[in-house]
Length: 109
Image (cartoon, rainbow, N blue to C red):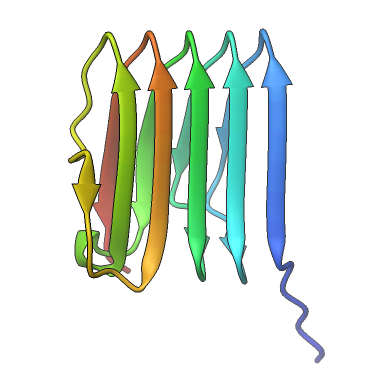
């Protein structure tokens, strides 16, 4: 059986939520909302996950360990459980949020 994996996923919306189930991408996942929440349960990307929200929460669980990720987190006016910067991971997690919270956990397989 031939198994094909999608390389990248990019989704964006205005005034609506994005909900992402457990999904595996070969390269990257990019989610952007303006006026909505980003919620996810177990996405995994081979190289990069990028999450960007304005006036909405970013929350969920990422498949993999915290140590696997280089993290860059930019938040304004609210709270985040991620550090602003963490280096030495072989994957990248970029998170940006304006006016709401960030709550991301990591779950090893």
